[in-house]
Length: 272
Image (tube, rainbow, N blue to C red; front, side, top):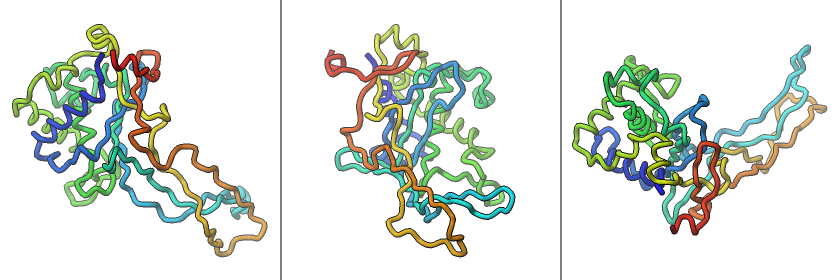
């Protein structure tokens, strides 16, 4: 049996220790978890999720009449908040999720990053993705890292023109620093090869699987009046969040991942 998220977490610690650009990251504040994702489907291989954004400014949704343009109904006022995630006494500020088996089966071939690794082994795409997600962590702890353009302004998206080049440079720096090959040996194998070697592939997930901690809307206790609003505007109540607003280590469970899905691993399986 191989615990994929544990292996990734160990490798991340070595990367952060060896790559100066990422040295500010406190990995005690970062939680790695897995989501299920088919290898033959489109989608991200991994994602960085920030939990340190402050509540949004109060707001509401509204609907206008197509002819008159007047507001005919609106939602209650609300703010958007990040859930709280704690493991023991440690507050978690970032989550990094990996889609299995999709992440395991990625390759440099026909990928955008291939141009930065000419002639390299295909598995290097996975190491690049891992560094890519770490690079999204903002040194100022204010969300996802903003990418600065040459003129001093910030790119609209989190992937600026030099983002992929920066990530590739960090990957090369890490490999040139002489890390223990055993730390990243698991990246050399695809999902089927890992299954053949280890029998089972397990990973940390949230008890609410396939859901995970995400921002949610909270209705304001005191509902402001909307200036100039017509008396007959209908107020639509917002649905209460169905997911927890706080998570602890009790919300973390280990699941077995296979090509057709994932299921929670029994304690006796993990002890075997």
